[in-house]
Length: 419
Image (cartoon, rainbow, N blue to C red; front, side, top):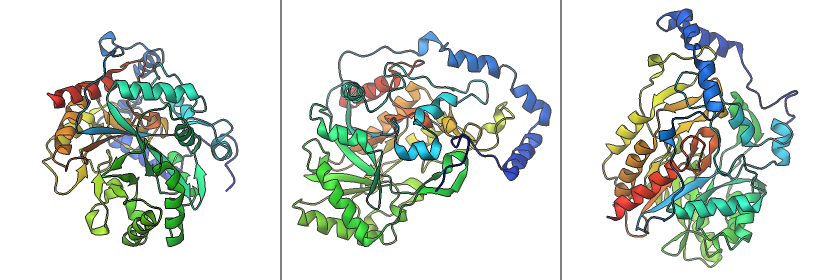
């Protein structure tokens, strides 16, 4: 597919979307006048965020002592995106990385935390070995048990593989890891043009065998995360397989042929997937904000007229709903997110969870750890979305506003659990 001319990473606007956004603004109390009033003060708020003028109380300095080990392990999803590749050069413009999106984000209401500025790691490039070395040091310092790298495979074609392969080749990066196959097609979803497919995903019995054989080199690494000696593999969108039960059977048989005692297969609950046991999978993992249902609060906010779609929800409402959950039936690995706001990718139509704080996140994580403790020994995992999803505002890495506060929330939750 040929890239769009000009600046292909910019949002493409349709007439229907513009008209729908205009009607929404008119329907709000105060109509156009309210919308215009919403922009008052936004410029100053934007400038304060961009210049790093944050409340001093928000910042938490780096820790010096790690938390204790426990039987519940925190697994942080890791996005291996922050380096240029030829395909992204073609699709989004020369030199593109996710940082280009992160830098362009802006607030659409007063109090909206955008743009987000990275802390000690800066706008890093994952081609530099010292970046991942420091990420591992920070993860270990705050009790993260493993990274779960997103893995991109399209019928034998790999994308964004360089950071993962660097990790594999660098034995000194002494942190366990596992993989999550992000098995969906790539499209221009960020720009609202999901119909423009950039890299298609086509599942088949032959591809099932090919991908599991390709994963063998990772599974054999002594750092690879195992449960009962079996490598752990997560599938992001299990519902996309035309015959999921058949795929699972093929994988288990092929793993035996390769000399393994088995494979521990996890499906996420993304896009409402459920019923994992009926397909022969070992566990389901929660992948918030998937599976989280809370009301919109956009009507309570003075939102900029630049906003053309999306939803704004309360992070506090999410935590309240999630911590009201009881002990699940079957093996469910709880999931948490430190925050979520994809304004970087969709500046005028983002899904925003407003009001995240380290304290709220810590409370959610502590509850998730107690839920995980109900699973059998060795299967007590909590998945954190994510270590470094800066384009979705979902990251544990230090930023200029909070410093190491979200990492400290992890360590604090672990200490409380260990008491």
